[in-house]
Image (cartoon, rainbow, N blue to C red; front, side, top):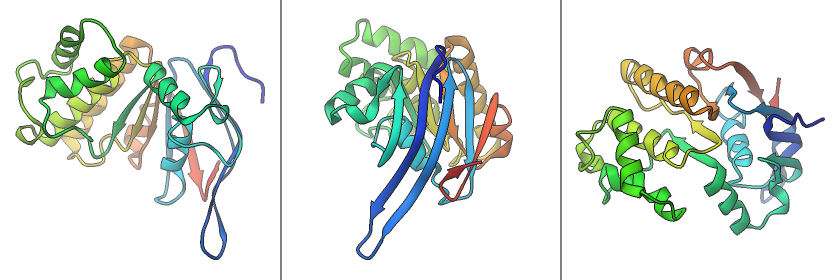
Length: 225
């Protein structure tokens, strides 16, 4: 599969298998995918089709059993775990269905964390600015348990975008939210995507959300259709 000079992510004949006690289980097979800079892509499919496994491989959280994945020109399967972690810190942001905020940190401190890990400058100023951008300027000193689900997801969005990642991965970002709040979060997600030219790759069951992306691919039984 030829790599476009503008592509930020390339999966070439990727497969993932796991060894069970009595058999080898194939989760993904023959995955070929190319994603361009600033593109928005939805991965949709039934539960158990392999969407989240694929997202984890594309983001460098795991390595494929077969095939190759290039993230910003680096072949992930050739990197050590520490090198993959550095590549994620340099290029990738995450938004999860379950928010995954640290409960003992305020909204501001949660957003500051990835900047501190990356040894970035002006940590507090940058974190406060992006929280204001997602409408939480007056909630920065609140802890997660003092925030609504929608507010927690906005903190998670701010945390994901504060390092200005090249690629944002979102796994069911509106899955735990009511319809109105989910639409509001989606609006924030696509606004940040557009304003910062960030490549957006999301896994979702929500076809309405998927249709807002420039492109949609369907997963079925571990393969892209």
